[in-house]
Length: 356
Image 1 (cartoon, rainbow, N blue to C red):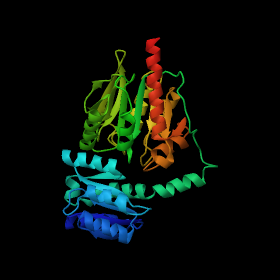
Image 2 (spheres, helix red, strand yellow):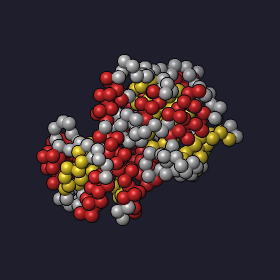
Image 3 (tube, helix red, strand yellow):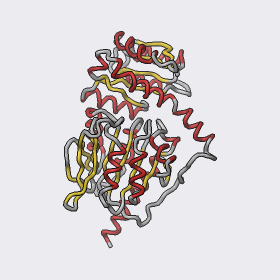
């Protein structure tokens, strides 16, 4: 994997280069001091991945990302944005994802202090995941005849649904936005989302979606009752669960298990809903690295729930959806648009039921 580092800080360029060079599969092919120099070096060096700072002189990271997307021929590099863990930084990072960045890594205190032990595994894992996406898609295509597959179409029909759960990771926020902005204000059931991101980022996601969606979107950083027409975005760095109390559904937030690789854990969210005794739960697994959600999806399916997985071609990283397809939990593998249509059909069906 060939990587170009774009950052106006000489210290950060050195730290990132040291981290990446510790992995023999990664080659740092160059560095750049600002966005303009970064775009020029992308054209010259043709890297597989670019790590891009957001705040830079001459040309900032967002403007450089736009130029890469517009001016650089295919195959364009995947761009990993490096954002400060602040409110302003997280909002800019989400903007970058909407513009086509593959993922975001937060420059928290340890990152800025050059603590390579803390940042090394996350940075390398993200670069491996987004760089390997094309190879993953080719592998899926080649092994289609023998690999476990899910149907590409699905209809809820008259199946009852009391709750929608969404698990999401790398590349997920823009997909979430596209799906949730299509839901009507009177969407008939609650929605709970587990998105792999730091707390500041999930707060920005919730704020952005609440501004753009007809449904109400809240940041799940405390226990709240779940209502129809509301989506709850689980606070990053903690685990969200659904519990049933007094005949009502509640969102519960906690820190256990602390050993979980991803926080919030999709497994924990899905598993909790499988124990609520609901008539039906619709679980959706979006793009993301790793296998989080596979165990919970299996439990949710066994309790009568329905699992839909994002299809390989539309994923930034086909990891989490692939895991639920391969363990037999997914009833269908679909594009985000097709899954949104399932949600719209749910809304129409339940509206007819109330009218009748």
